[in-house]
Image 1: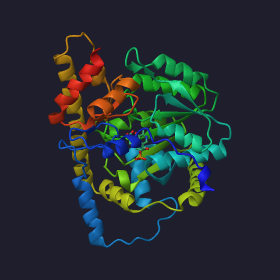
Image 2 (image 1 turned 60 degrees about the vertical axis):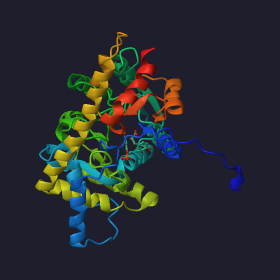
Image 3 (image 1 turned 90 degrees about the horizontal axis):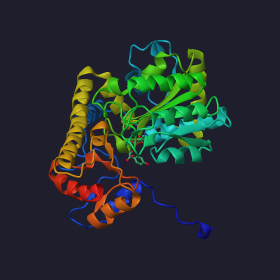
Image 4 (image 1 turned 30 degrees about the vertical axis):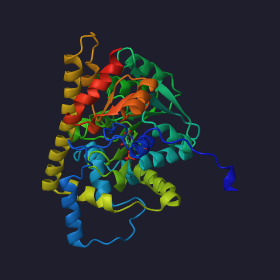
Length: 400
Ligand code: PLP
Ligand code: TYF
C-alpha cells in the first residue's frame, strides 16, 4: 500500500542544509538557511537564554500540560512586545493571542481560521516570499495569489505594482505582509509607503496579515521593527500577526511563537480565541512549554530583558557589519561600474544578490557555497575571515 507513494521534493531552504551536511569539502559554506552564526560560524545560544533556563531549573518547574492556548504569562508578554505595553488595543483586551508552534505553526493556525470562517477568501502574498507561505496556505486549502513586490530592474520595491495588485484583489482579501526584514529580498517599504499600503487595504476592506519573524533582529530595535504593525493597529484596523522567536532569541528548535488577532472589541477577541483553541486541539492539543517559559522569564524581568536587547543588538550588528564589508569589498575592487548599493539598502539576515538559478547552482556545485536557488544568501553564514574568498566567487558570477 505504501508502494504507491512517490518521492517528495526536498524543501528549497531546509534541503540546502541537508545537501550541505552531505558535502565533505573543507571549504564548504552554508549561506542557505537563515540561522544566526557567530564570527566562527558556530550556532549561538544567547547568554540570556541560558540564564533563564538556569532560573527555571532552580525553580524546579514541572512538565504538566499547558492549556490549549499556551502559557498565560507568555501570551501576555508576547502581545505587549508586539503592540507595545501601553497600546490601547492591549488595555481594551482586543487582542486574541494563542501560543503557536513558532512562526510556521502560528501562520498555519491562522490559515485554518481563514479557511473555516472566511470561506473562499483569498490571501495575497508578495512575489517573491518565504517559500513556506505557499505550502501553508495550500495545506490549509486557502486560495492565494501573488502581488508584485520585487523589481529586478531596480533591485528594489515595485511599489506601484504592489499597490495596484492590492487594489485589484477581491474586497476582503487577506494581505500577507512581512512586518520587517522581508524574506527573501531584505527590501521593506518606507514609513510613507506603509501608510499608503494601509490606505489601500482600508479602502478595499482587506485584512492585513503580518508575518513578524525578525522583531528586533532587523534594526536591532524591538519597537522600530514593530512599527509597521503598530501603524496599522493605530488606525483601528482588525489584523492578524504571526510571531516567531526563532531568530531574535535563537530559539529555533523550541518552536515558540504566537498568533495574535486584533479584533474590534474585547468580546470578539474572546470568541476568536475560543475558535483558535478549537482548531489547535485536534492538530496538536497544546503547545510545548519550555520556549514559552524562556520568553516569559526574559521579557518579564527588566534585567534579563535589557540583556536580551544587548545581545540582539550584537547579533544584528554583526550582520550589518558583514553587509557593509560585502559592499565595501565588492564596490572597492570592482571597476565594472556595477551599482552595488542594493546590498546596503537591504535589511535583515539576507542579501538578495540577483544571481539566477544557474549561477546559484554554480556557487554550490563548483565552489561549495550553499545558497537558495533564488539568489538569496544568509549574511549570518559569513565571517569576516571567509568573506574575501566568498566575495571573490560572488564577483566572478555577478560582474559578467
Ligand atoms: N516567516 C518568515 C518570513 C521567516 O523568515 C521565518 C523563518 O524564520 C518564519 C516565518 C518562521 O520560522 P519559524 O517557524 O522557525 O518561527
Ligand atoms: O528563510 C529561512 O531561511 C528561515 C528559516 O521551513 C526557515 O526562515 C527556512 C525554512 C523553513 C523554516 C525556517
